[in-house]
Length: 249
Image 1 (spheres, one colour):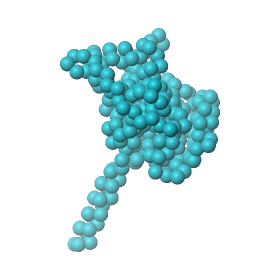
Image 2: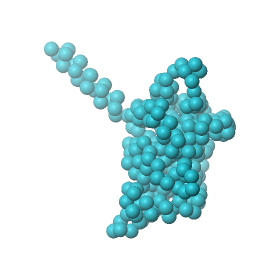
Image 3: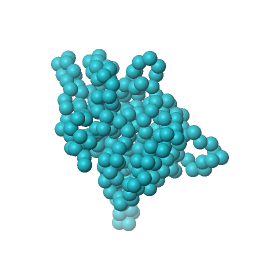
């Protein structure tokens, strides 16, 4: 009887431990740079972590992949790239087998709308949820930051910026490139004013926020010119709060 009780307690402990991993997501206003990559490496806690690049939003473009390879060429990581334009003949492992066997996943920029549609068709959205629960670091900029939030504004459709739904891993709205294009800021604030978006985080290019278990943990930028903001509605008025950033060196 004692052995059975001990086994039950051990089983519960293992079950709880499996879901008690800290979850880190690192979105940024624009694509990854070397300083941000070093932060991702630190978050893994490993000397030479396995970091995978998902260039789905760019259509697995060679240019995007080359930029990634150049960026990480002198970093202490084991880099890899996972495309979605694959066939059963060429790729024998499932997306789940590949994506859940790394320490961090970095999502590239491009067309957010198309990326989300492909991920859902391929089941990658569900795999990324499992990755987060497993403690794998999720990161990215532009489309690679929008995807982690509930929704935001995207240039993925013709004519004008429009609303795009993300994975909702972070329960906020989001705007990347906050300083990059003059029409992004007023449109984001307008959507919050109208109740289309809930309160959320806006990020300039080269600025980002590391979220731990769904809450801001470390607010960073490469310099004082690029900032992060919390944008919300208070007493019917949109309020933009500039967040104090740690300048990475």
